[in-house]
Length: 461
View 1 (cartoon, rainbow, N blue to C red):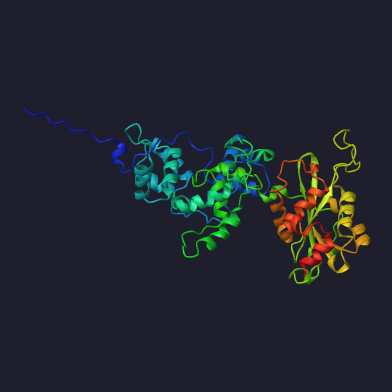
View 2 (view 1 turned 30 degrees about the horizontal axis):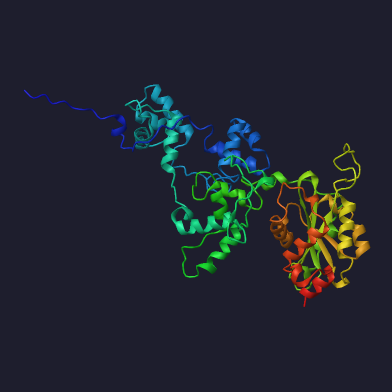
């Protein structure tokens, strides 16, 4: 007599769901709390404090911020549409778990939560825990299954196109070669996978910026529409963990050396008392905006270690650049800091005023019409600067660096010569003039040294 044995299917097989790995420990917060977390980040609150306010620990908030690259995920951002009411919420899943434990039927549970019985039945079949061989419904596990099923992963363009990815990586790395063609490795940089590299120990690179790469692609591949990518997509591939397209250690080659985005609200500060409505950028003459007339300048400071700084002046029409030497004053770093004392670091209001006046004093009057600066304390002596040089000073709106776009772009290029995290006071006047000549396209060996007035008049033709 033949004995036929029947093998009963496991609940995981009967559920119709593909096998998945264990969800592990449930997430510290669900969608509503994640959205609240990023709302607090947008207000300028630190990631640790924001996490505590939503009920998570401070290290969890740091991890959320780091994994997202400092920017809110698209489904958590303020512009994301709210969830449709057709989907079960986590609160409803908790009610389903409680009613199941009380022994209520599916129809009774559906009536209590105001849903169709088929919705509850499908929820129990799809999202219940089945690792034990039976259906065990728990709200946290059900929410994890629902979130996993709702994802619509889309492979990035850099991950799909090997040629494009190699093109971007080669230009981001920008290896330095000797005249013989040998690659010069430069300093050894240890990648910690967590934070930005130490800015004073970055890799040597003639790296392209993501925007330069994005704009060069149509020139190198005019007939290949697949060889196109935006600079924002490159930044996100570097900053956001989990994309897997570009190697994250390539952030060591970025000019900023930054591995995370910084929310703009964290840099907000109070306006300066010396800035009045009459000298705001909105009162600046209209001729400045169209760049048709020379003589309108934009200025700012680039900062380094030990409170060192270099001043930059950029003419809006020609992009002609002047660098201001701001050496530290005697006693800086050797004596205790005096409260309300003089700015010994070298970039106080008096030092900046004198440096600007010295740089533009040889320029003819029609080439020193106006100067646009941000609302930094180093320009507190702007009235005296105007009376001494005749140049009108205007100030940008708070947190609006794009209003000095030419100067901001030039400062980014100057970071290739003066990286962040280095002591800028080590560079003398001649070195600054050499960099300015290189930036203005006037090598010393061909044209020799010229005064700013002579060089600018030559640019204007």
